[in-house]
Image 1: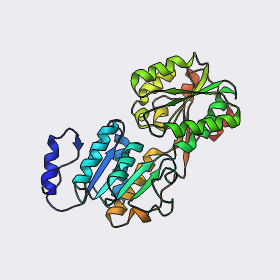
Image 2: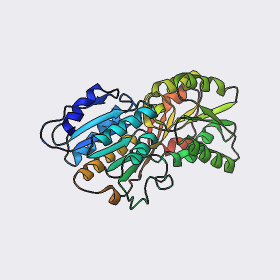
Image 3: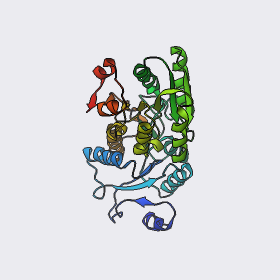
Image 4: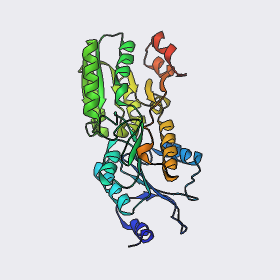
Length: 326
């Protein structure tokens, strides 16, 4: 079956693709697969396209992009990757969490891959080294696991270095274990009492928050996770409902009314993802493109939320904040 005919035939399969129709003239086809949802990651998809434009590629003009959204369903994400490989596409862009990256890497050694990654990509085996990734994959690091110690420090400053701190994890995220290990090691060194709470759907999130008072939790840290990124308003509402000082992983939570966030700028990471995708389309090999590490970590504080929770944020935090929402 010819490639164009196969693309046309995809309209009848279960996976829903979003993109403009592929034109008849030859142009590279990019397969963009995310383990997240289209709604939750719309802002970041825009940033990705912005990066592509910076290196001269515009969807529908000189490149075609085929989007596949896993909706936090690992099996669906795997199916999307398999379909992209069968097309085949000229480049795979994998994002929205570890499953998309892992499945893409396992599915092909020939198609170039650019991806986002949270944990250390060398430690997890995605690349051979930061400077020389090797193989057919390179990535843009969003540096989420390594920020756990800093989030714990911020939580301790808020509650005065005393009291129980909870860590909300998504047990379905392959990185949950390494996140918890990092938290345990840091807490042990600080003699800090911590508790683990798990949630992977809306009901479990509600149960997790409801149970925190029984565990005497004085503050909460939310793991960086694609599913949590998709329910920003719900998590912020629960934090308000239970009057719990909560540190989120992304500024989007603070914009929605969350107390505080600390992490790399995800929109900037996706812009870099687009730039790297464009460079590969122009002939660069992922093996030679160094892993992009974040150069800035933003501490965002919402003073209006602090007042509503009757929290007097310490001066040490306010002085370090990169942005204060009032």
